[in-house]
Length: 110
Image 1 (cartoon, rainbow, N blue to C red):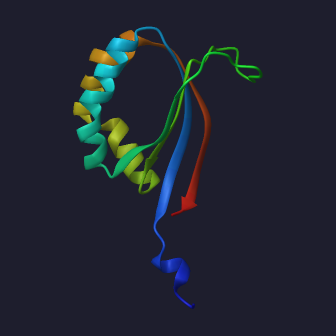
Image 2: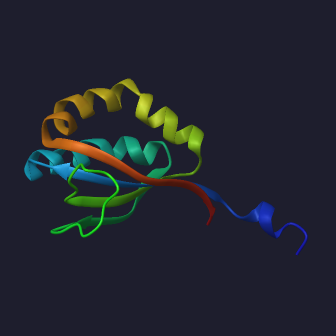
């Protein structure tokens, strides 16, 4: 039992709400960025389409909610700064998403 914590993997997770205005273009964004996401040891644990938000601290509307994870925060930061990702984001994400709301970020044991 001495080294139980050392054997567990850490994950850095972010819960994100979006207002997607072009679902088809956003789907193309996900397809284009997924291989790069996997390269950075990331993925999605949950993904929802939301019809109604009952309570929100942020005035920006949300119709998509997901949890994205990486092995650690450093890999997350590298992924979002990667020039290939930035090109994919500009091509697909920017024209398909009206707003982004970060609901939570945290590190957890896997």
